[in-house]
Length: 340
Image (cartoon, rainbow, N blue to C red; front, side, top):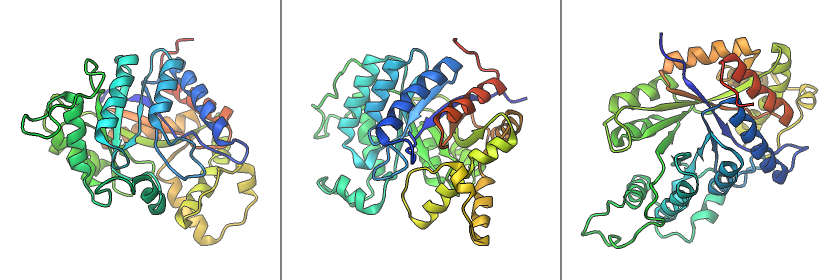
């Protein structure tokens, strides 16, 4: 029997019609402390821009706050969108975080802009060559700054990413397609696959990662995380009600609309077309909803199919108390050890 995967959290700091962005950030601090006590392995925060339902734009700031407010759980980025940033700045920022919170920081790196095209231009327009896809070059540069292994003939050879005595935290490459899976494997990095929104098959992505893996200074063997969307409640009926918020959110995403999350009871009063109901049904099939027993069965099946080492759960629902409860029930279902 395969070992039980570790459980972690991906937090997008959900903004709702009742929760403004500033409160959403404070809710993230509260949730991080909650899951730290529950025994989850790590807590990652994302980078999104100009998205009305997500409050986090600066993972590093949130990581610093969360690491200071917790005592045990690893804290990291899911992820830093590298094309939006200078590799040297990322290396310096995460070395600083590692110096302040040694052994508890992760550096998840993404290739996407984390926003729409116009906002991406606003983020990058002062950056030379920002219109080109130079992600792989940026990633190698980040690793060189972080490891201090810059070739003698490189123009940056005399630049030291400070604090120079702190290590760059473990790097995880985020992906939702075959590209990231193969790149992470070839470079010997950890790999996190975004099953909660990816259209590419999760089992295929994980297979490509393992098949392409080459040992590195970072990892001797492949290490993978599967991002999953979960709504866990005391009953299937309550989980179904809470998930209505996600139903509308995904419909809006398909239309290119940006708006805060909506109360599930309000969503359930809305009228949807047959085509919209078909989209909702298709989307629900990729997520894990229900009672603790139902959610565990679904997650166990996903872990077995993908051979993921870790499941990273994101729960984008309207009510913060219900979100806390969802993680409580999941911790109980998996027998996590609480520190309370």
